[in-house]
Every structure is written in structure tokens, then in C-alpha cells.
Amino acid sequence: MKKSPRGERLIITFLGRRNAGKSSLINAIAEQDIAIVSEEPGTTTDPVAKAYELIPVGPVTFYDTAGLDDTGTLGEMRVKATRKVLLRTDIAVLVTDEMGITGKDRLIIDELKNMEIPYLIAFNKSDLGSPEIPSDEMEKSLRVSTKTFLGIHELKEMIIASVPEYFRREPVIIGDIIKAGDLVVLVVPIDLAAPKGRLILPQVQVIREVLDNDAIAVTVKDRELDEALEKLSQPPALVITDSQVVLKVAGSVPDDIPFTTFSTAFARYKGDLDMLVEGANTADNLNDGDRILIAEACSHHVQSDDIGRVKIPRWLKQYTGKDLHFDIYTGHDFPENLEKYKLIIHCGSCMITGMEFKRRLFTAHRQNIPITNYGVIISKVHGLLERVVRVFGSR
Image (cartoon, rainbow, N blue to C red; front, side, top):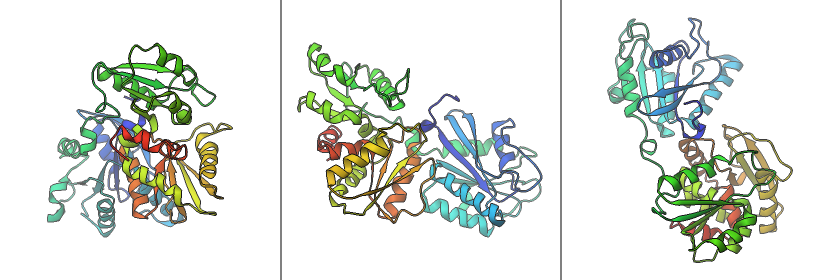
């Protein structure tokens, strides 16, 4: 379970006022002490991730968070950190107590609705009191007690029933555009940026999906592609390449052979390909002095010719002929104020969930900021965007 790709885990966040029993509730659901519990209010000071196997859903991550009624300068920072966790939340569990739903609780409910996050309300400490459940929240609410275990099993069942549809269905990367027996050529450059002794996660996932569909995967480096194509007895049904060598590979693949990039496939798999293509096309309207945000979802060792920090800015400046300015933002959090940016260029999002990536797309869209990803913008600046999205019926 702990080896499951972090980007494929369902994220369930427990939030509420201090001392409402969030940590105790996580322990009761997990039937083990995975969260620190104390009678002292404010024991949980920062969001804490805990791995758990939620049957029949599979591997999930529980987030235990600081109280939303925390006070003082540090308290405000803790509340802010809790709200940032919501950007990567699939299901939220609002934990209240015998006091019922307070004004603070109502504010977070409104925020969850605004962010379109599925949520449940757990009225904890029901052994001490039985507050009235508002009629508009009746279907989402349940009285529980971590002391007597009242309603714990039922709450777990409600969480399972609330799993979003996108997580229930079997997502496909390329499985819907290939069939059994198809030959799929995967072009994987091995250079200084490639992890030693292994392939990166998107490449591994695509290979597995090819095999799951009873198709044939042929993996080659870009330097051996021409030789590999010559040796094949029939043209491949699909060629997928790493975006960094898309221009070189495109020259070797005849135009009548379906052709795309790993990053373009993942743009559709986890996000909204049409939105990302639209974002890339706004590069045609950039002007001198415009600011571009390079958003990296996870930290990594920066190479001298790093794709996001060096290559993409260089290619985009060459394509537009404009004096552009680039900011780098790394990690799970997303900048709160995006208004100064004319374009957001996001990484491939292989280490975050589809919902977290979609929520970032929604955040950008709500502020009317175009957004695209590495692979899509690379194909754009190399004049290959229409070709790499053609296989998915996009344009």
C-alpha cells in the first residue's frame, strides 16, 4: 500500500474546530492509533498525512488538520495550511461536536461547496449530547462517538459511498485508442535528466496499460527509433514520445501514423486536454514583459538544462520573440494570487491526484488565467500541437 503512486491515492481530509475529535475519529475509522490524540486543544498544528487501506476503495491518504478556530499569528498560519490541503482533497469530513454546526463550521461548508469538494459532517461526541442536524445537511451527516464507537462503521460506509465517480471508474491513458494486438512504440530518451536505473512514472503506467489491453509495447531510445521502425514488419498503431524529443521523433514518424506524447496523454488522463490546448494557444498573444508561472507539483533535483526552468522558458521566448518573465512555484500548494500571470505552465502532474490537478485548473479558470502543461506547450512551440492531439480527437 505504501508503495502505491502518491498521485493515485484517494485523499480524505478531516477538518473542523480544535478539540472536536478529528484525530480520534481518524484512529477510530482506522482501528489503530495513526494520529496523535490529546485532550489539549490544538494538538495537531500542521496537516499530517496518514496512509490507510480503505476496503474496498484501496490505498487512501487521511489528512489530519489543525483546528479552523485556531487563534493568534501561528493559528492563522495553521488555518491557512489547512485550507491549502483542500486543493488536493477528494473527500472532506467536517468534524463537529456536541455544540453542533457553528458559524465557523458553516463558513467551511460554504467553502467546500464553492470548491465542489464532496463532504460529510460527523457530529462527534454524541455520547455527550445530541445536537440538531440542519435539514439541508441531513443526508450528509451522521452522529458518531469515538468513545463508544457509535456510528463509526456507518461513517466509513458513507465515506466509501462518497468516493467521486472519477475515482470509481477505471481511468485510461491510451487504452481507448488502442486494441488487442496493436503495436505501440514508446520513445524514451535516456539522458542526464533520466532517473538512474528506472523509468519515470508516466512511462511505466503507459507500458502497463499497453500490456493490459493485450497490445505490444516496443520501447526504444530516440537514437534507435529509425532503426526500430525499419525492423518492424508493419507500421505501429501508435507512437508515443517524451516531449523533450518530440521535434526529433516527429521527423522520423510518417504523418499517417498516430503520434502523441506522454505528457499530452496525461493531460487528458488527469486534467482537461481541451483547456490545456486552449491555454497553450494563448502563447500567440503574449507580449513583452508578460509574467509566466512555471508550476511544479513536486520537488526534484534541478539539472543544468532543466525542462521547466530552462528549456521551456528558452523555447517560449524563441517562439514568441518576446521578453517574457518566468516565476517558479514548487510543491503541493498553488499561489493564491494568480492575477499577475498571463499564462500558467504546469508540470505533467504525475505525482498528484487527478482531482488535485483538476482543482488547479479550476482555480486558474476561475481567475481567467490560461493554463497548459509542459508537454502541450512544448508541442505548441515546436509547431506540432495539432498533430499530437489529433489522436485524441482534440484540436
